[in-house]
Length: 543
Image 1 (cartoon, one colour):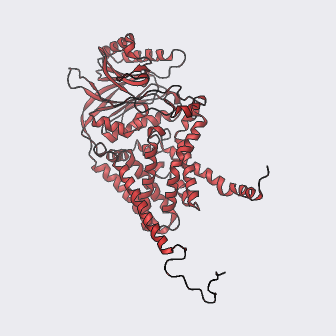
Image 2: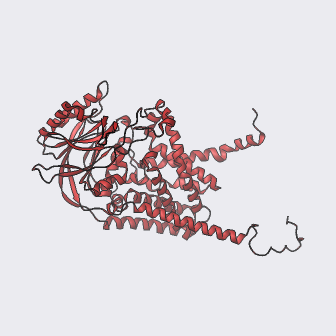
Image 3: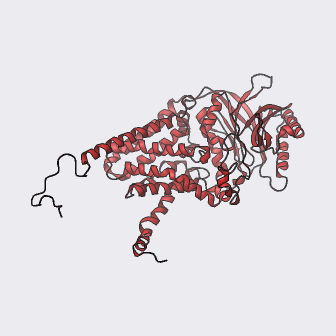
């Protein structure tokens, strides 16, 4: 088949005008991934969006800007989730292409705010509106059906103390807003002299806002210490790996006797059977509890029946005491798409043939729970809020547990499938944000690393257990009382960003309507027809 000459010329022009620009958009969108663990170049997050913003600004049309936004979104998602490629193969590219569409409207918004000469007033508006548009993207993809809130830009600031203070005020959402605001202000420094003053003012305002929040935000008050042990058996491969992992966990737990513990935490899927149907294994764990003088929080990944009579595979946090099962259990509510279930399996079930997608859907729990651990004297005790795996990425779940009285947030996880990637460090870093948001310590216990503990300000407690470690470690976890502004007020930053965008869209709509009224239906302005030019006959168009 012959290609028409006109189309062939368009294709020949594409490498100069479109193909290379598309590659630049992909690379520009991928750049912020370096701010996350494992590279952890946290400072890069404050300028990493600048090349992307400048590229979108240079788009000649709104359609090109939307395309730059989409391609950059693809690059961002692939870079932040690149460790999923061995499991999902080509399907990760399809998912990135679909989710990347969320950035297409943002590309239009950036183009509208930054194109052409930018006045001081327009620059000030851009520093506010552009971050709000970004936050709507983060909100949309935080739905667990779209993969959950993994790789949100604010999460890159997990080890920056002032940013953690900001998180205690408005959650990770507010941190993302400030990071994008700084990127927008830096971009404005390059685009026009008239906008530079407003850009500098915007940067100063962002710095002052962070400083004020870090200084005046209420701090949780220390209220004691809990001694909590994390048991990380490490990589156990080969036949009967589940039974061998259990044996290693028992041996490591037994070594903790005499340490004055309040709780021992095992990782996700640490037990491969339903303990209610295997009393012999329950008895072994209860014997460990008596030996170390503390309850053991294990995690069952097995076919079982929940309290409502549903039968299937659940992932459940179960507390075992010296007398056996305590009756306290939490079933995982938010499952990993494709890893633990396949959305619309009748349509997308073919994904199981491409990678390590779930062969059978796990069932969801129906509610969150807090668990009570009695003190050594039978009174006092400790209240913990269990989470399982990537549930630690959801700010609302930790907030709910804190509001329900949890003194310690505990996440049981396993990233052994992605052992030699950025995933374990990325996952562990989320614990710092959840701790800071809620003013409660977070224990992140895994099977194979990285296991880590964070204090109520998000500060790291002790040394983490890396992915090359098989050990049991004891942490003196500081407890805290009182609540943060985020716990009290919730996701106000998200609601505020939505309100800003509604006002902006209304303003743009009114201005567009007035512009059309001035121009008139003929496009030549309203009112009486324009008089012909001198020397031009009436009724004839000019040259």
